[in-house]
Image (cartoon, rainbow, N blue to C red; front, side, top):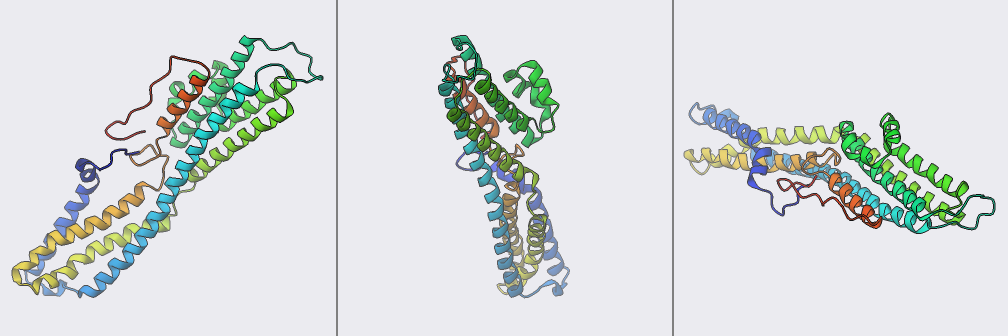
Length: 322
């Protein structure tokens, strides 16, 4: 996610220079053929071109609204992941404190070291889950050893790595852990168990929402025709402008070049903005900063565990927070 208030010109130029060169060369060619060569039939009335421009602007705006909705929904989902991660940590630490009244469970009261190990296992597995979800959405399984494995037991890490959907199985493992705490150790009563299972259910819903956005591409008919219409308009624009500028004088036809390039660049930039917002989980400049969010969650949960050797928050790299 780009975090600077204003885009640097090098960023703008990175996305614009190829198209600007194409627009410039095309407009110059039109002016040369129309002026020095004298092929006046290139000129077309301005009114149809202006009408097409209005239609294209409405269409591109509609497409961009849809693209932004996908980005904002993804950000809301990850906001929910942040909130429910804290809820999970509080429940794990405050519910699992000692033996509860469970006459059907024959087990000694949990020691402080056992409780600490249970807390750490539940919270570390959750940190593994958020990172596994991030890697799954970005299709980065090669980063498992660095991002997920440190928070799991070696056997569990290898077992989860082999799954088709590791985040789903990590949540399933959390549910199995709660069952053991309730049935075998008596460390959870029915109310606490139900509340923590509801939190897992919400985490499943949030994961499913992210997977829905990731696995459902932005409708190609909107994206494709938006691109086609913008370039169709850019192709007709100098043909409509050149006759209007000629009315000001023969030498004014060359004004077609800067004005045509400027208007074409504006329309093309709007189309690119929508295109770069279609898929918010691709680790690109305008995507959701999942790595930074995962690090923030990790810091919060480990601090709740009482740890002091915590990783630092991620800082933007070239104004981009990943």
